[in-house]
Length: 555
Image 1 (tube, rainbow, N blue to C red):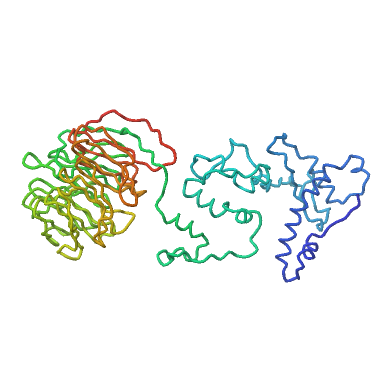
Image 2 (tube, one colour):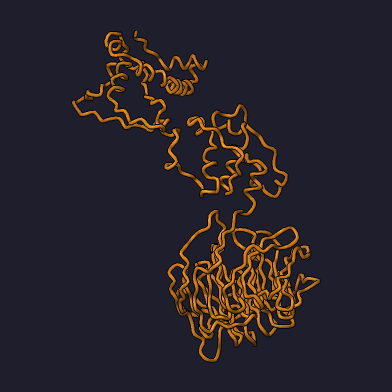
């Protein structure tokens, strides 16, 4: 073999047809050429015989490559490592005398520092065994099939692309599948760059989604990103925890439990308020009103630092949970306060005296406004997610919508419920959507568009509707019921009505209290059987199988 030193930089200049002004591009091209010619160098190393290597006049740089290849230990051969083991070649334009051999030392007789082995490109692209495969998303039903859909992986393994399988079920995998692997033209973009930049037309509803105006996502993928998370609901039929709650009142018109944003459950039991920490299961007694009063409602401030407590004598107390100290006490109601709702610093309370009072919690004594429209006890209050509208329900079968800036109602349904309206909840997914439920004489759940005033959907549940709550991760609706089944139901919306997804039973009396955890994964229900039951309401691919804690704990 004759010595044939190659000036890679000059070859790259010729290969790209560049001028001296494009020196940076030529340097990149030279690196690309060295990478592409590695298999040729390796074949010369593997095919060279000892006699030929000793008799031929070799290039000094190529001789160093042969020596480095001979000294390198060969790993054991395995089916996943039968690809060509490439070696890095250095530009031969460098003087061979300046290249130290593996046994030589650098200047000043200092021991040479071995060069750190960089990660080879074939280590990154070579397929791993099934045990080493790492999935970026949670495993789905056809995870093994989706893992083989990478064209880069198929190119090295020789395995064909799996077709005919269902699309990935989780949002991330489905988005990546649609944008990268849906069609052959998209799969080709993983191997080489596209000849021209793809410019997509704006989606039809771009005016409603300005953040997607400059996005390269397709219209279907944009719709997928904007839609609520979908998946299979896996709801255990049994509660994962049960707490005994002695003296928990069986009263349809009261609201005695609430779950804070800091993961603390507040419970009103007779004359006392107890706090239960979901993180540590620690129970703390916050206050005791004494023998002359009792707790009728509790509600947490959005920040989770203060708890509002309504009493049977018409008082509204504000407690600092961290200091365990009462910081405010508001008077004004003449009868029991059965419901409380927060709107920032604005505290709203409804009473059996038929009035709704709004107060600024930062002011020691002072009412912002008094709302008079109900003709019976006010038992339900809910502020909209945008904090601009208040929904109130009462024992007069009325559902009334109030504006934050006005003391007069802005809307009441033309066909009201036929019983008391306590169950109220605003949808966190769609604006102006409100769900309401009626008592024993009505038994219906209705979904309203308060902007247009129309009833969108309704269903007869055949039992008293005590509470309603929208799911935080999906548009499922959760309801609790009284006579005669005493159950919890999870509903899925259809085009015209509601479809029952799951029914949870276990309480021995009507389920008059409901609260949802701050992450939306769990709910807690309270009933006249003096128990609190915690249910897992999760939106996951595979059913979680936690250890079911059926033991009871006395608060």
